[in-house]
Image (cartoon, rainbow, N blue to C red; front, side, top):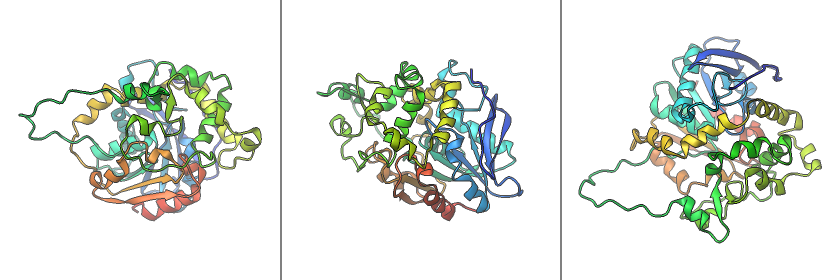
Length: 375
């Protein structure tokens, strides 16, 4: 069961408070721009392994630009309580997290909001805009180009069924250097213990994980993929396509920054990293990992199937760092955005940033967001 304290530091212009009875939970939020009534609402949804804290550098500038800005610790994370990591995993499916977002907007007294999601939060934000475009009227996806529900099979009643071939997991495992997808690892029973109790310690593990997915790591030179074959996917960094025998702690350890590099990190100094360390030490990772269990399995396939063939009809922006492999790990997803999002504003890539773009380059990120957010 989740537990919480509310003693994490905040920054000038930010406050933290609780919204009670949000689908049975007490949701902790960070908030800015709350002093002036009637401002348009911007809801910020964090990714994995992050918290509302990941938006700390973005929120004051958005508030100064005239918005009421709210970032919750999502279900399974941080100071939000009332979820149970060991209950039915389906309570952590994308549908549930999107419903949480809807309840938050309503609890704050709004009929509509712009929603901005990073990483896992981008999937939740896109799903929310898909199912409730009347509420979530503007969408920004960050680092995760969700390319929409699957196509709806049509006029195929007389076609012979295609026999399934080997799965991608089987093809990755059969490579000369056996591999596995990190999404599948996060969904596995061993992921929680591997990351919560790594040999290098939780602080050092998270430091290495944030480092290798950032622009600081020299191995990040992303480019579009062509086929999505197992062989091609195996060219991605091992934090995405892992060696089959290793967990994530062992995967990132060889590329951890030196003590001198860690001490010089300006976008995630140790005091800021410590917020994440304390939060996950308190709650564990399983609540957060349950989303991957749903998304990669039958629950995820079933909950999106009803929306097959649907498009997301709200104005949409995609943003990512130029050093972020996440934009390309699903071949063709970026190109398909224009089909899925007929009101796509465009795609923006931020120089000097990797996966953690709103933390690595908050000024550039926020400037672009302010340019496009409806008022």
